[in-house]
Image (cartoon, rainbow, N blue to C red; front, side, top):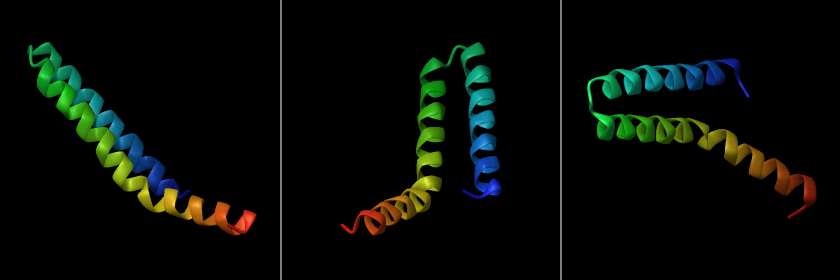
Length: 64
């Protein structure tokens, strides 16, 4: 896993956390939930390539 990918994931997490706290303090809990869900989806989209490489490595290792 590349260091830049880990930094991007950490950045998305911090930004999502700050936005959620701001929205919750303003009484907008529903929007805070959507921001959290969006952050999770964004990170999963960033990890699709790494997950694919992992699955290919497991397939090659076990000869599947």
